[in-house]
Amino acid sequence: GAVVSQHPSRVICKSGTSVKIECRSLDFQATTMFWYRQFPKQSLMLMATSNEGSKATYEQGVEKDKFLINHASLTLSTLTVTSAHPEDSSFYICSAYYSTYGETQYFGPGTRLLVL
Amino acid sequence: DAKTTQPTSMDCAEGRAANLPCNHSTISGNEYVYWYRQIHSQGPQYIIHGLKNNETNEMASLIITEDRKSSTLILPHATLRDTAVYYCIVRVGGGGFKTIFGAGTRLFVKA
View (tube, rainbow over the protein chains, first blue to last red):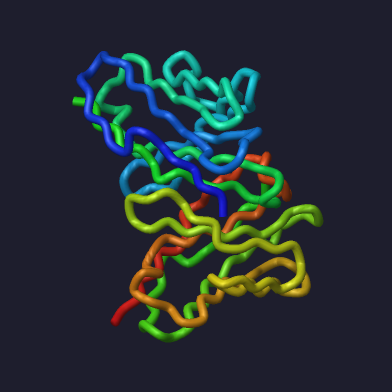
């Protein structure tokens, strides 16, 4: 299957700072990428859908000015958590879609964010 | 997207088959059944998907009832490494469509 990476795998930051998380498709070009957030002992919650070269589509209740998504190339999407606060501490996961692999998406390993 | 119902948790003995059920009684004709799993602190892993025929790959088998209102994921010989949360998802085919996760089934494989 396709390989999706995320960087960093873990990040600790101070409250009020911004954090950028990268999602890369390593062996394919992803036309669409998705960002999820997962709190402890909960399921994944979809945050936004990112299409290369266009603005991201955010799910209801997700602040687009706080969670900035950029999908500038077919292999890279970034999520920036601006002015992070402790309640933003979570596990952030991306997934990518590539038509050659059929009707599925492949997920990255996740990034654990801790805001102090 | 159609909703799914899965048991909260299940146990399975190592080496035995693990059968994970999923109910999706409101599934539409153009919706597929997808299965993913998530091992602790990792991203979800794609397992298998199907429309109406039974499917098998190197990881698992997917049995879909004739009326498509339920399905079963079968791990033929469960190992300790299969301990994970298994998600049954019903949605329109095509990877470009968003995938909405429910609570899933927590499978414990015991030695």
